Image 1: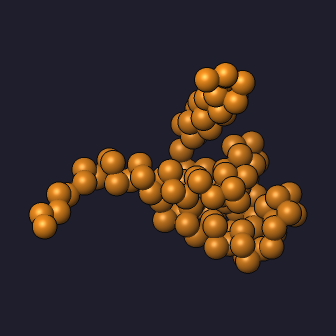
Image 2: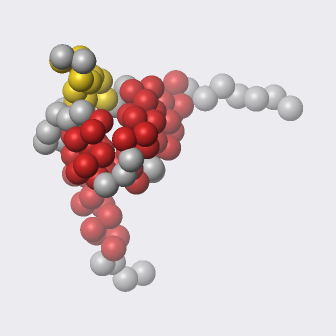
Amino acid sequence: MIKRKMPETDYRGSRFCRIMGNPTAYQIVKYLLKHNATPSQLSEKIGVSVQTICSTLRHLRNVDIVRYETVKKNKIYFLKDPTLIQVINTIEKYVERIRFKRW
């Protein structure tokens, strides 16, 4: 069987969609759209354990969605690219549109 190589843009897009399909990752990104935060702050705001937050942040870092700065031993997370605001807004507009559409 011959396996075709997937274009890198397609591969990276699929990785982005896979991580953003995780509800915790989506909530983290939504929060980071407006606020930089530590894992503890994210845990408090989202309502999941710090361990889950840290694991999800690691996945988000692996696909270049978030970055962090260390300030006095605290990791402060932020979105790598502000273009993500447009992506999230477009996704949510689409979801609202199909939510009320009668097929």
